[in-house]
Image (cartoon, rainbow, N blue to C red; front, side, top):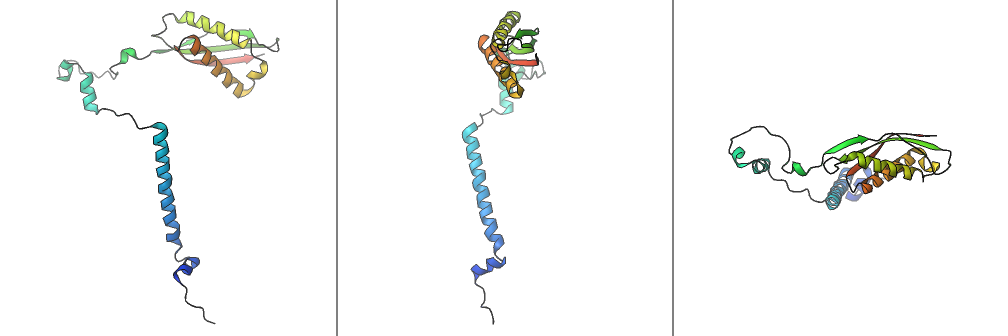
Length: 183
């Protein structure tokens, strides 16, 4: 018995029209996904801030006698508002040794440091003394179970960093735990 000739729609079942039927939806879905990703990125991050062209920014930042080609040829690389930029410094604490809230027989030894704005902090030693007293008071309220594991250490660092930032009115940028021994 002879088979009737196959129509165009039946040809794809044999694999003859499969490439076009697969490629077109794949290209369309790729374009839709790319557009959606671009839209989401633009929505979440927003448009990049406009930056002036490099030649205009350099000539605007130079005094008139330097812009004319007279004077010092050194490019310091500092922005025009460098005077208002914070100067960050790292200052280590002396070791903190105190007992924990529970059990009362457990002790903790903590070595830490802070990153702070040196311009806004005229007396960093006074600030460190205040932060040490605050850290000791906080550690004395903690149970031993809250310090267990990596998550406990991360939470402790976040809590101490937040307390230091609040106590210093934003001058402390970060509280860094260097070592901690619990006994």
